[in-house]
Length: 353
Length: 259
Image (cartoon, rainbow over all chains, first blue to last red; front, side, top):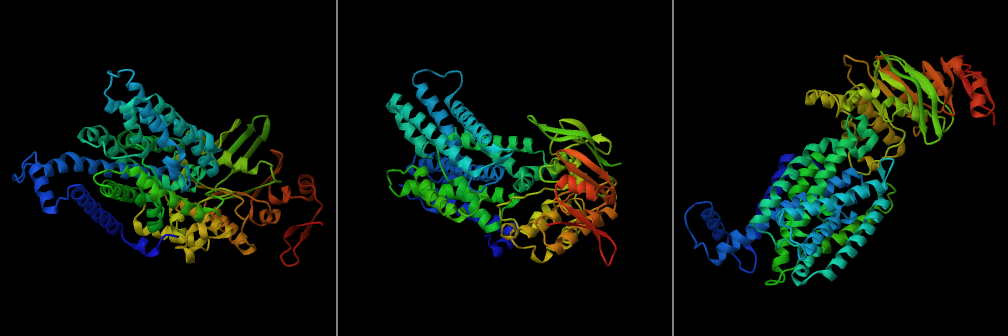
């Protein structure tokens, strides 16, 4: 049930609360780690990097930790968290089911299989016609797109996706992708193997400025574009025929938003591997608090997704410090029980299950 | 000016759902479509709304093929109440009804609120406009959907409007069945062309100006209620024995089925 009191909060208040949370998360992420850096030092370092008064030597550990490690990681975490949350909300609208999620349905593992194939085959061939940092997102996008097309075809009967078919299709696709990845591990060499575990569990540990340069424009495009479809997605929740009757060109809408969804998931997987459940948990929490209106749901999900993934990442690299836990393990640890709780809630609803 | 089906047929595989059916929905009139289950009533409504394409024949909205209109232009001219709904997201009643305003030329926020409130009021759901849609009963949901559909064509425009209702009375109690059809009449009086898919011939006798009786995808009879809903037609189509009686108070005819 949405909380009525929360729904009465004005949009401005909601946006304000989420932005404060975002700022707090950002400071926490920059400050915490194997080297704790106080806030005053963070300001000084950022100010210096922007051309302000020199405060630290450029090659000091603190300076490098902030500018070369934590800041790019933070930026990537915020964008991937936001994009995955919006991708989840979009998928739930297209399939008109609050349990749909790009991870559960196999879009993420399809994307990961494609990326891993490029990595493993890359040790046998050279891909010099296109740099790897462009090739990986492209491969992930294609992998994710193939899975999405398959699932849409498979699960839709007369324009209605049957939830059980959807989840079972996801099960099968995840199994096949898992087998494919398992096969590739057998033929991979040692260096490729290390990056395979990165893809299986998801981590922001590879984040650097060159990753941001490749991925950020695409993720930003998705984050800005999807909320523009909010009104049409609201109509789509009533049903495809109903949306059509309300003047929405449903086929074009679905093509557009699924493209953006796959783009978000593909780029995220290429940069950070499979990070599950963000797209399931975040939109659900926002709906619970503020209702299902996409004009609020999409931007709010982006903000909360950004906050949650960055918090999870900060936790993932501090709990076992100096070792690092893949953040995907953490999100699965939270997301798995959350999904079971959702199943409990919806088990009597014939429309959802 | 009207919404017309001209010799429309609809075939799926080797099955013929509708065979050369013609029908006119005219502004200011209520046209009821009756027939047994599987007669093709809903298919006809889907063709008229532009949701499905005809196999042959054409549907004309203001003398222009329905598929030549953009989805938005169509949505400003006709609203459709489908037979079944499913919405598992927690929209409030008011939110569902305001979705009906989506295709409309936006008015001032005050006017928009007035329209939505008036539509909620018209179907008697204003008093629970903050309740969550999934918590409503079947009949309540139907009335909310009806309010949404009415909100879509609430305001008169410089072009005719059409209202297509697929079994609007199916899940309603006796009183709400009649208030729903009175609403349809009110819209007709206001110049809207109304098409109703109905099961109860008595409701058609009371509220329709024109009736089309369908069976197995073909028209059995078409015309005024008195011409179409005769003992002979109904017995042939439904395969039951009926009597046409007259109300002792109003002298209006009504139809009774022998048990």
